[in-house]
Length: 327
Image 1 (cartoon, helix red, strand yellow):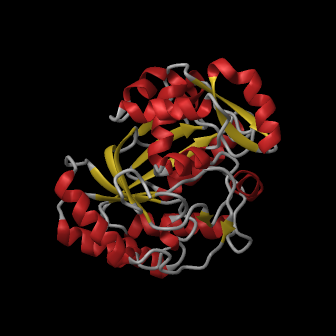
Image 2 (image 1 turned 90 degrees about the vertical axis):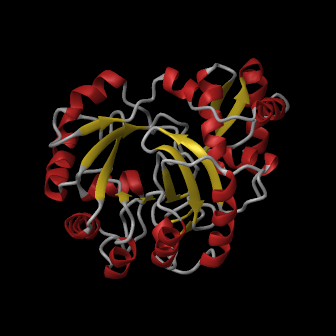
Image 3 (image 1 turned 45 degrees about the vertical axis):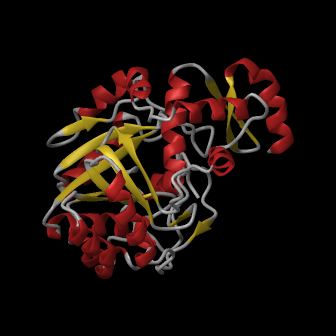
């Protein structure tokens, strides 16, 4: 449970894509259709296509009503969290009920992998904004980067996003995340751009692996390369910044929590999930705090045993040893 006593609602947290975002987590940690090499949450522990009411809609609504009475008005209510939100079979009913509670726009952050299913498309129709992802231009790199469930083919995924974008009455912002030496090269970007032209989203958001990733080989592109590659895409293209000044500006309040994080990391390296669990925070809130602490130079990252850990910068050498022990 997070520090506000809420299990499924987190934030509002600052988002480079959505301003101030009040998040709703619809699935248990790392329940997803993909196991992306760049995922900031680590490896997927439950890769599935099974849609179910993993978290009951009435339970989410009770927390949301409570939160809306106390929180400053966010720019968006975002359905996202610790896995793929469209796996929750109650997502359509949740969106409809949220619209009865408030006029704050509802955004759905999805990997887009289930949009080929009519029931998933229908469920999202009441949202204001849907943000699917496209990380590769062909079947091979789709498998390499996203590591999808075996029943999700590349063409099925592309067809689903394209069909949804045509049907959806709201806006579709397509996030394209590029990796250095993998998809972030001109020949691959041209393939992705051709698919984006077919999908015709309202907006394209170009991103890279700014945060620690599930796999060490997943590396970010420098900003100048992102800028150059953006010219391949049709329509409005927004580059999601990883500039340190942006990172430093998004740290939430409650400075004492940051002191607790540093106190923990000075004693031992911890994974993102370990910090969240140890301090009772939602992983999305933890990510924002770690962004700011990384930008301030107060923490660093290391990889051991295929897992990413955070460590206080002054204890990096000791941290590498401890991570081997815990990996």
